[in-house]
Image (cartoon, rainbow, N blue to C red; front, side, top):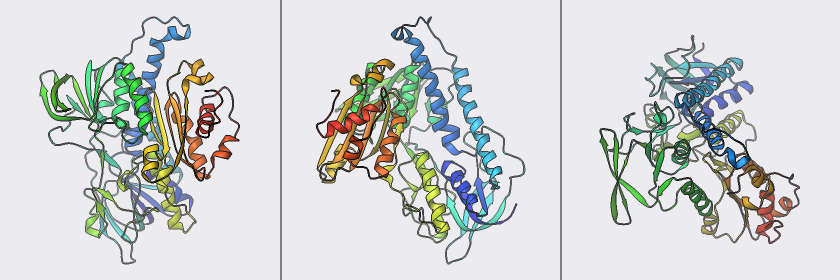
Length: 483
């Protein structure tokens, strides 16, 4: 193992390991410093294992409602330990896959805690790597042998890709027993009969959906008037109606004022509309956002600008200090794995001197894997109007789509927002079955600067859910067929 590199990346999550692979492909001598586990939060404790849990819940849901499909299924049951074991197994398999990719691409992995020691002024960036911190959660796989490398390393370019962690509110710190973050919520020892979810962003709603589908009594408390605050208001309203139809209780425009632990759970004081009430449950999931992992890196010490716990960068991942870059969650919203991966590629290609396209945050899709699913890209209708745009808006309901009805999934909507003057697709928003797989069609359209005319003349296959995308575009211009 060398001590001087072209590219040294701090963090082996989606942004970090993808940047490392792209760097190796372009001929850079590359290393990754990782303190806990390859694959980061996404692979080990976020995107991947939650989807495995939600898949189990989805299958359980269909088994419970087999009679809707003409099937006779005796009362289904589940083994929560087996559900969690499957989820952890999926993560373990992919964790090992990342380690294999590092080896295949001849990328050195240095196991430990990184700290920037010297940067800027045209010289190499110096990084000290100390003993690895004790992980908040033990890695799925043991640390590979031969990658421990404590000491000082030099690199022409250092990329900070340290990700983020759950935000903790004073007085509501997770204890792993009664108060959970997504770490604990992902591996319950037993299925709680009741729980309160604080926060209705993607993380909060996904866990609320999982536990409700598995039979728990779930209450969601959201500080803002709208659940799923970053989504289009109309889409959020459709989703809320479906959640409540499933038996989920939702308190919006409500504040958690106090949390008290009891012998068998928690008592949560909620203030709403000038009134106060106390909710009781076995568990509380705190899902009030995440914060960047900037501590211990000595970023400010070498002159890197950090604002509100996040590293300030340009659209290519460059910080204000020569030779230091940042990508992924630690570089700001949207805090999504696919954004981090894309940012990593852009950053490396810019370093190489290639004609890299700058990051366009408005073209990063967002997906929430609850039931029903939610997916979106671009501006909401409200945001477009707020920017002074004259818009044309199209809508198409799942209830009017043949494939949706055949699937037994008639609840949902596709919504498109266009610039009335130019025909530019400003945003697309969906709620319903499999919309997380559909949204990429609109992402590609936005990337190619496709207008409404080109979308209207595109042939969509029948019978598919994607036909609703076409009909929504047609509706925006008064040409909808099946509604």
